[in-house]
Image (cartoon, rainbow, N blue to C red; front, top):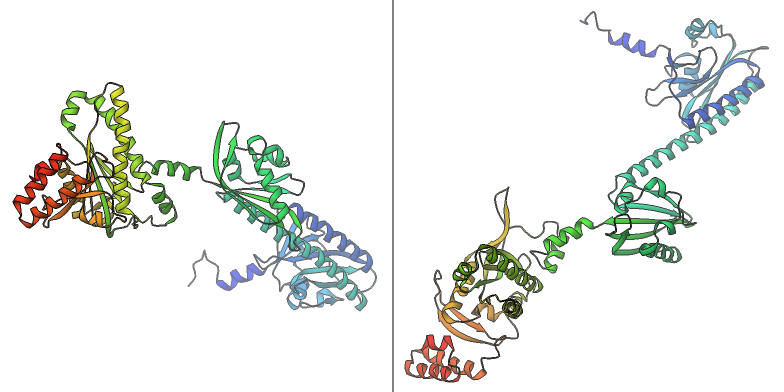
Length: 562
């Protein structure tokens, strides 16, 4: 049962099929022009075929209705009918000419409109309007031939005039499609983050999207219509030159890592530029398109990342989607360095001077590490923990770590020379390097994470650095680290010991590439003494170590072993 407030479905359907007069909506400029052309053709039809009144019905795909674009007696309103109603609906649905001499005796005729506007239809001639794709676009209808009734020749004439109306409608549809495509393309260009500038063959700017205006700090509206040479002049004249080269070659020209000078800001903007020649389907030159990719944020990001990572690591992180920062197990070489006598040093300097000294020291050491493809993992008080081979391992990780350690002592000498000249105390450091398998990745909570490594190799490197104090060595490495380096660096094996927290004994090697004050005789004699020591030949071992001390009286490892 249906409610008294609801209409039965069949009544609702019938109401939708009833003719109705609605207020005519606003017409676009192109549709208004189309309607004028259709009206002129209709006037010709009425004149040639001697009709009293006429109307043009077009099909509305959105509603499925036929609506009038030109009809007398409607007081500027629009008539909408079901495409099967009346004589016009019959012509549209059948796709055939409808010619009746007495409308009120034709069962297809609907007298509703006559009653609504006070008109009486006698004869009528309706012709369907077919588009170029043979779809029915609408109907042209003539009413009441002034002298007699519409004849067969009249039918052929109206068909010819309907075909002229179809041309106007096809043109209008094509124009609508072009406007849609143009609107779509402009919307797409407006939404792009890359800047787009189009230039015609006369080197006049024809379009600038908002991104280009933003990147180059241009007034886009004011720039359109201006010469490209006026916009890109002075320091930016190279843009016009690049456009000329691309136009001459007919090939796209890529200019990565370019810089535009922004005079209004007295600054440079980093961008990647592509100069693309524009051609039509016949390969006729139309102009040039400039595509500008803003890399200013990437440049700033790279500048920030360079504080912590080497350029090699940054390049790979910028390319890889996951950044290579997921949890992995891999072999890494780890470097620990520490300032000797730091506690008494801070007591002498005081807090402000200590912070100033550390900042100066770390700034020197950071460059050394990153220049050797290392990554500063963290600063622990006065200590530095650096990674080589994380997040991206290579065959040169151990060698890079040893070279970085040598460089640290080289720049420390420069820093100490400056400090001594300023009346400040010199800084002494020790460096320990270990190689082993660790777990590497982003570790922490969702709110705060650190990219770091965990594993026994971290403790190993830390203990090796502590051992530099015991042996009085500048740089100590484990046997695994030394074995990874080819060619072998100048070094001597100091001992075979089990470090604190380690379960297995390791070889300790002192790197001597930066120590020309230790002669080869010391290295050779110490090696013979260590061999006897490890074999339990105590007397010969002591003699060799004493001989080392005879050559170099302050050799701390030899004194310790003796």
